[in-house]
Image 1 (cartoon, rainbow, N blue to C red):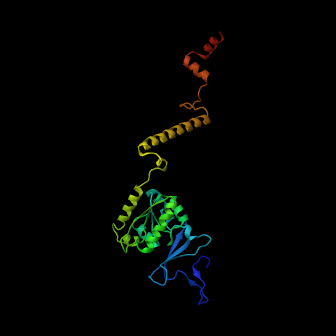
Image 2 (image 1 turned 120 degrees about the vertical axis):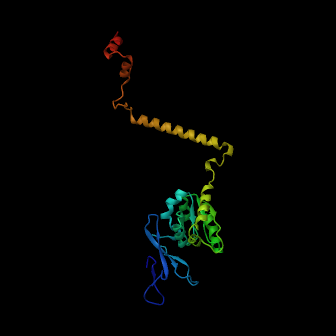
Image 3 (image 1 turned 90 degrees about the vertical axis):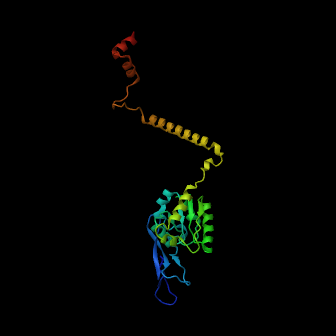
Length: 264
C-alpha cells in the first residue's frame, strides 16, 4: 500500500488494485533499478485517465525522474540531441523503430529538475508532442524549462491526428522524418560561447591563440614532470654520467691523465 499498488476501498473491506485493466510499465532510475510503475488503459475510456503513475514514495518522485533515460543516455551523448515525447507507448514505439535517444517526462509537464538532468547529456532537444491543444500547451512549457536549463529546443510539428506512436507504427521508413529532424537539430550548433563576443572575422585568430595556450600548457607540464621524476636514464638502461665523466669521455684520454694535467 505504501508503494501505491493497492488502495483502501470506500465500498469494500478489501483494498483494490490501482492498476487494474491497465498495462503496467516499470519505471527505473538511472541505475536501472525499478522504483515505481506506470499504467496505460487497455481500453480507452472517458471516465479514467489514459496514463497513471505510482504516487510519490521515499524512492520515487515523479518530477525528478525521466522515463527511459537509464537506457538512452549513452545514445543521447552520441547523437548530441534527445527527443522528448509525452507517453510511455510513444517512447516504446520509437525505440522499436531504432530511435534510441528518446525520453518521456512521465505524463506530466517537464519540470525544472528534469530539464537540468537532461541538459547534462546534450544541449539540443526535439519536442515530439501531440498536435492537439493539450500537446501544444505542454510543448511551450517544456521549451521554456529547457531554455532555462541551457538546452536549445526544437519543435517537430506532427500531422493532425498523428503522434510519435502512430508514426513509428507505420513501419519501414515511418520514423525516417523523425531521424532527419533530429539530425538537422544536432547539426544546428551555436558558436562556442567563448567566441560569442568575438567578431566573425577574428574567430580564427582566437582559435589559434587557444591552441598556442594549450601547447604552452603541455610544455610546462612536461617540464614539471621531468623535474619531479629526477634524472632520466640512458636508452641502454645505465644511469646517466655525471658532468666530470661526460667531460672525460669527450676528451678521449684516461681519467688519470686528465687529473695529472689538472694537478700541474
